[in-house]
Amino acid sequence: MSSSKWFVEENETDTIILDEGAEEEAWVKIKTTLSIADQDQLGQLLMEIKIDAGNPEGLSRAERRRRAKDGKNIDAQLRPSTVALLQVSIVDWSFTDENANKIPITPERIGRLKPRWANQIEEAIDINNPLEGQTTPQNSAMLSKEDPLHFPAQPSDS
Image (cartoon, rainbow, N blue to C red; front, top):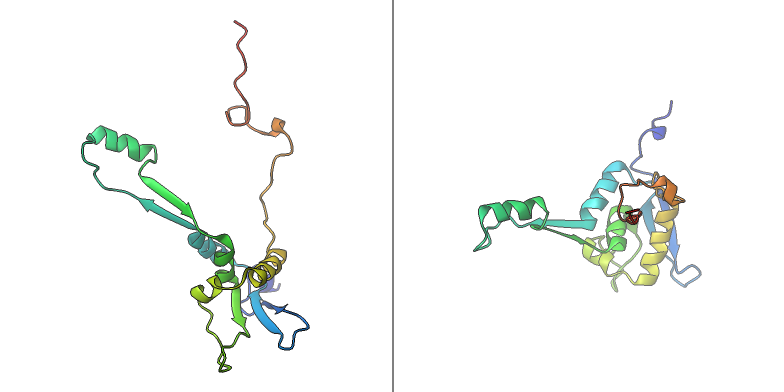
């Protein structure tokens, strides 16, 4: 049995042609399939979590515990997803500077791509790596009745 059924091979790439038909066509090589390690790295790039373990003046020990339990000392921020996805997916490109030197692939350079090209690359990545296992319930009968966001409180008969 082939190991490719179970594992993502490191050399599996697709080449995306940018500005097709131009005098100098540029290309970007992306991973054909993202591995679980790539997905974990993407998750780390997308989310920044800060935990404030400080001791705000004037708060009692009980209040500090309550805030910690309620998550009030946690700050989570999402970062731009396209940049993170491109950082994980791009393995090579043909971009050169004015002296014909290849421009290194760095997070900073990826972040400076023009949206037109970044979006074209992202579309190719999405085609190769569709979201799996994420379903949205088709009707409210599938949702838990304990979920107050989806089932408003029923008026009482009293």
